Length: 369
Image 1 (cartoon, rainbow, N blue to C red):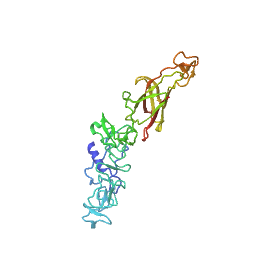
Image 2: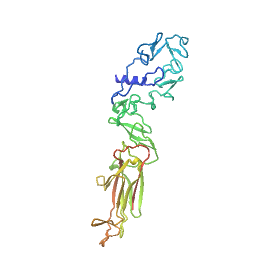
Image 3: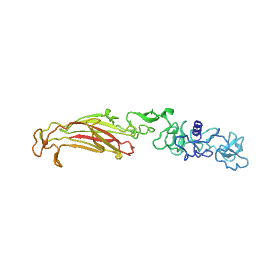
Image 4: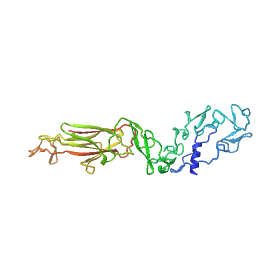
């Protein structure tokens, strides 16, 4: 029954043109169910639309949702009405006979405007699409804002698959998506690849890879596949800038680099700094690990990180820093010149509760010295 109801809905979901059926109300739908529709064996079924409950005036009958006069030719019809299939129609506005008898606007468009089939005043929809008053021609098989029918929105996190909120792609497959490829992962569709020059920044499979960009995102999907940025010396100082995107579908970008501490005799210029220079919507954070994926956590959920030995400062009863310093036997007010060379792992991820939207990448600056 659900399959038949859905098929009928695709046929009957046109708007408010004269003689048209009204869309099925959606305020009582239960997510996961196909919206209910009245089972009508034919669009010509009596009393299917706006005929008065007390019956039609004498000389007319309820047909195609309105009280109509029977006819044998156009001369039997009043005014500008034409005789089509035995009843009088206004071919300027009737979706059943638009512009001429027999020209149906279903399912291509939702209305007949001045004798032309139209979706909300624009071109009629292609076969397989439904005309909705908001959004125009939509594929209600996959559209989570109009799932199964116009205006039936799936709850956050639910995908619309096969016209059912929370349906399974194992049963219905995945649609084609703009500028990328979607595939079934268990029960949900995910973006598996983007065309060159496009990225998926919001993690929503329905809109595919929505961002056109020339940014090369080299961030690895996990620590074991972290992208190596190279070695950065403190003398001379060195730096790099990286850009990328993270999304709910691909929530991590992993990088690692080697911070090299050159041999020192009197002052250590080792100064590692990681900072966002562009953080759209303040929606990104990073964690830093020392030495390896399982190394000590140097910072979490931060936007700036520093390790600085280039200044000697008192911390409690100790002096911290290595400038001035000596390679052996430091004097009072000096520290030992040590080798601070180390690998640092960085993972960029969404901030807690952040909404990732728009097509602006984050920009991360990494420097030493």
